[in-house]
Length: 66
Image 1 (cartoon, rainbow, N blue to C red):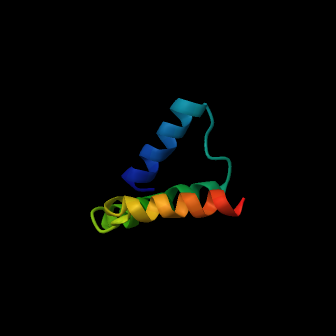
Image 2 (image 1 turned 90 degrees about the horizontal axis):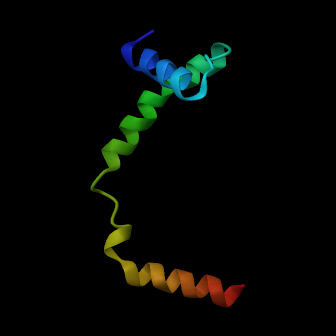
């Protein structure tokens, strides 16, 4: 098990008082590193915040459709 997986398991144990109960839980914890890296790779590339008018328009359309 790598350092990241050990850290994840230690954090879970510290905050929630449980150990990963089985192999699938340990596998998912190890895959978390890849998920975090994928989100970090997107940092700065998403421009939703740059277009608040589109967000406002979407909110209004949702309100009017309800």
